[in-house]
Length: 95
Image (cartoon, rainbow, N blue to C red; front, side, top):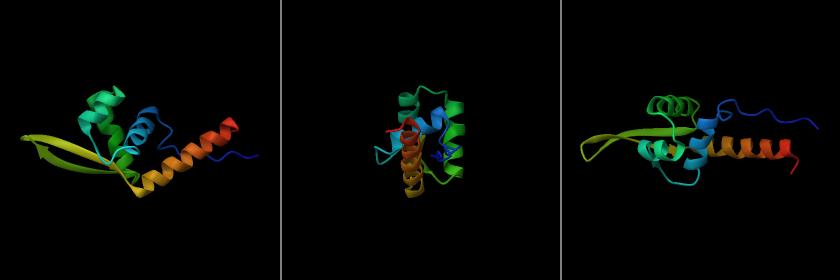
């Protein structure tokens, strides 16, 4: 049995954590993702940019109480990529 290749965009611990969080919520702001992942601001920002470039996450910059607020939501492409990634990992585990 040949294994499906793992998506290199999602095969990164922080990017996978972000997608896993966003798949269960409508939107997640930067501070929510920062809190849940425990990442540094710079690293999280970089990884969100990579997810956005891949088309997996849509990013909206707004203001909340006069402070910049970055909202992230998973795109249909991101949902499909996540589902395929989970299936591939499940196949690797033989379940």
